[in-house]
Length: 131
Image (tube, rainbow, N blue to C red; front, side):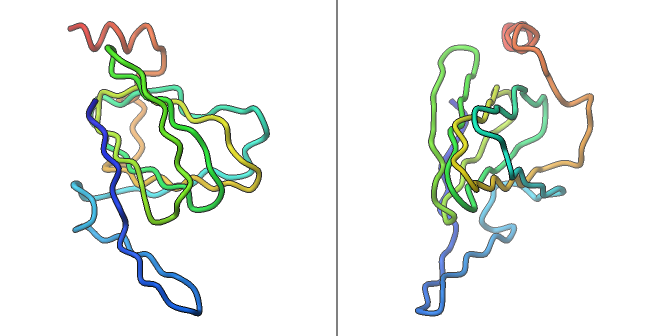
């Protein structure tokens, strides 16, 4: 599966830790940053794949599960460290669930929003993968 956990540089200090993400941390230049928060208990986010866009997800606070599917296998990865993120390359179906109270999911994307890059139905995703 075309995903990877990537450690984010962490500068430890007794006053609090600091992590920095610059273009040398990620294998793509990022064009968009957004975050999910106040996700109600039991709610799910995601539920799509991208044709071209790559994304890097970080649990800035709390935790959540990322359910991934490449058309052949499914994996569940729990994110719960603000100094570690999950790289999701294009062509991977993702769903986010099991958000803890107060969790914040930061997403760094390789492209600006383009609805044409989204595959929003799992059946369409499977057809895309089988072509």
